[in-house]
Length: 105
Image (cartoon, rainbow, N blue to C red):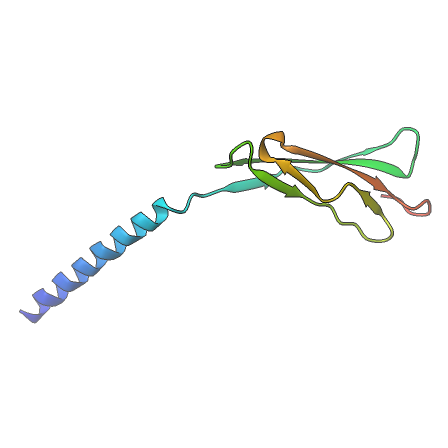
């Protein structure tokens, strides 16, 4: 008799936990923001200026949802127009980098 009560209690507990887990997963949408490889292009006129293109892809985002794109560099490299607030649907942000004359990328 005791074993039957224990088995029934464990079964009911299992059913309740599964039901709660299913309901809670309905409220938590999975959003993925996947950065793509950076594209770095050197300016043809100025050898110490570069354009850095940051691209992204993802799912479960609306095209008008805000995305913050930011680049930080060290060693005296100046990053212009960072951070940028873009819309997810744009899927791209372009930054300008200025590298000191005595350094290379």
